[in-house]
Image (cartoon, rainbow, N blue to C red; front, side, top):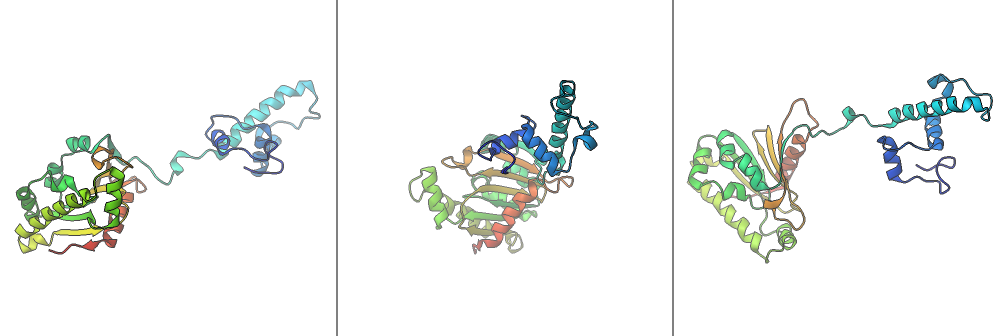
Length: 271
């Protein structure tokens, strides 16, 4: 806040001070209260029911004036404080938070998730949860029975993979080899499927800074894990998010959009 008439001698108040006033942690000084009252067209007479004192030196009016200022501070705080229900985003659709991917997989097993799903979108780096924890035979049976998979791998030959290898402290080529191996798993899966079922397995790669491991299930549930600096994906926290019609501005639509937009920019991996 900056004004020629409001503020300390420097003419400014720190952002933390203003934040504390708005959140009710501290009272703003009288000059700020009076400036805010003027900004909102408030007056002691009309808003607080206090008669204009004849003089400020009248000892008998000091307590009344102090009470008026306190009520004015309260009223200004109510005007300035953000309303909780006006927040543009909500986290009410977050159903669970897990410290690591291992904890999340124990609570929401990959195989059980795939067996109950009709459509799964998965993006990340190497997609180990999908490619290394479910057997080829089982995954093929699920797809033959109607499961649709869209797999979005970080391009093993791209700059983003090399950058992530350096960030995690791996030898050059480590993540590249891992991702190529998992791409071969999906290729082997598609080779064993019937032509109709094979169309239900789509694979793309993207070469962008890897930010999230996202698994969207049937348009109603998402498992999201950030890629943190200097931390393996396996060790990062994981969030379980369920779509909620009562929370259209929750987190589920955010990560659904992240997958969709990255998928659209990705490159197809042919059979």
